Length: 325
Image 1 (cartoon, one colour):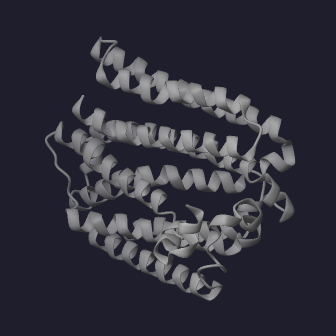
Image 2 (cartoon, helix red, strand yellow):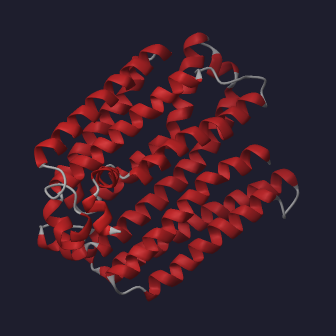
């Protein structure tokens, strides 16, 4: 597979921009909008105010900025990646460094301009700050934050959580522009939408932070050789695994709290939503703890990272269960 990536420029480009992560970002923004925000709006006799075309541009602008972030991260991480993942390094092997910079600038500028256009169309130019700040944070993440203890991990986790909030922010922004009293007049509905979005954002934050630390343990050799000060390097692998354990436990507690609220609201235990949470989220996270305890090689930590990525996808797909049940 690694030879296929390096020998095929299309695959190499898709690897460079982390196409699977970009798909996850797109899915997050689409599913949260159409299966959480829309359900809450419809139950209060409202509908989505942003048309599909404009929302597609909002998603595209976010994806372009994220892709630019992945490109610049690989640009500055060549030495580290040559130690950790030499078989999948794209910059300098398949793509020249100057082209990586050109693509980064092109994607960033296009993403920000699209973000400004979308913000203007909703009537709130300050909404474009999200795109601008995201681009700046991703640049500084690659140049400074990634090598610092916890700072880089937190930046990525916060950005992941903020993607979940974007559908709500843009939707409510336009509704508030059309009707200045909208939020105050429909406070309960807004609070309900905020709470639902906040729960998914918390899940995104904790799972992303957990995965970032797991990846730091996986890449410890290359990070140490290039002067990084990640958690495994500063605190050691054992303590880092303890932190991961508590982050997973916190995530499970959050999911149990969701089940409790569901039982309280519906007076039923075996609802599709509760069964889904137990089987596809809580049990895999519990299995991840078991795998993490046994992990002692880079490959083991890579497997843990894959398990967590599948859990994150399952968490995202639970929005469909939320909509129908």
